[in-house]
Length: 129
Image 1: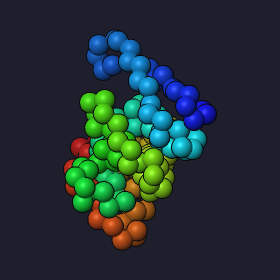
Image 2: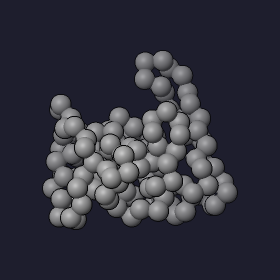
Image 3: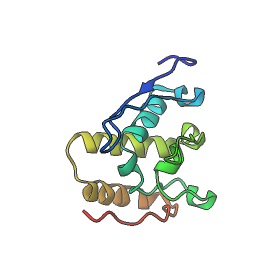
Image 4: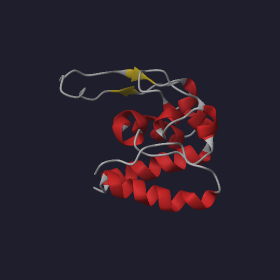
């Protein structure tokens, strides 16, 4: 998508059968990867909320990878648009999810891969399954 364009994200809201349309902020179009990261955070909100971020953002109050993109209540964060680690993690989570990897396996793979980065992860509880 070109800068200044917008993506309308629509999906079925859990259990309600309604559709949501969200216009991404301009900074979400910095690159194609950034745009894909923001779209993935909307489509996989629950999953992103169970994955820690390893960029060091726990120090600014983030509790999971989700908070690097938005707060789950419609308020976007510009943080991920300028953070290669957030985008790399988001695209990894997206790809693993699309390959049918379980939430717990995704979490373990992310944890194993990013612990070598030297940053503390966000304080994200482990998923149950």
